[in-house]
Image (cartoon, rainbow, N blue to C red; front, side):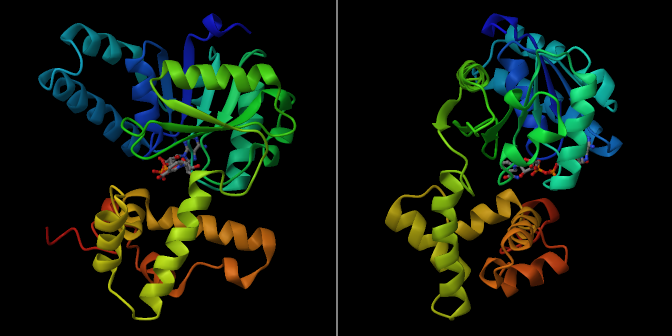
Length: 290
Ligand code: NAD
């Protein structure tokens, strides 16, 4: 496939990441269909687009015409068949569960045209764990956006051993046209680049909290005011979701069987209480009070 042949993009999952990836692609001129199994999520995503675009026009970031075009470019649908049937490129951003992703990719392989690339936005699952659910392993690749996807520039493209040069090149190119800065990982590695680096920081931050050395806010402040990070590890975790961190740690533990990979007790406590961070109003911080 030539890069110019990529016109229709399908995004699977309209949650935290999916609706923003879909909107970014629509703003950049692609025809986008974003699917989800949850009607409420689809409605919320559509409402977000309606409120986000006028705000961009007000701030002078988009012209009224560009906003109108972007609105016309994106649709939220409840059917994977409808979303992927004519797709040239799929970005899967569904819930971080390997068995679910394998099922979605097997379905996509059946539904999407033969030339279509199937990318996963997974934070931690390397595409070689998914590719063999399809008959097009060379076209299954990691394309990892960061949260919030409309704002964050980085995209990690991971070239697993099964990924063709053409797929990696087209995914890098698409990321650029979507106004992102892609980095290429030449081999699969657990946690990719940035999350590995963050994991080291986050592990140390959790240890300092556990040992009672400092509180959440002061550990975050040390990172912000001492290291120039835009936000500290706990605040960032509230943004990305404690549920996602918990699921990722459990997936890793299931993989390795190493107790050191289990989520730390405080994270488990928040998870069990349904305190997932900003989206539930409470996580490491309490947002109901601010
Ligand atoms: P989320 O829970 O906000 O959204 C996931 C969505 O997938 C939900 O709306 C759910 O209804 C939908 N879904 C589940 N099964 C589906 C199916 N069969 N078909 C269509 N939709 C389905 O999760 P999220 O935070 O947006 O994460 C999505 C993916 O993005 C995960 O793989 C995650 O690892 C990755 N990711 C997340 C972040 C982050 O900061 N949250 C950052 C980078 C990557």
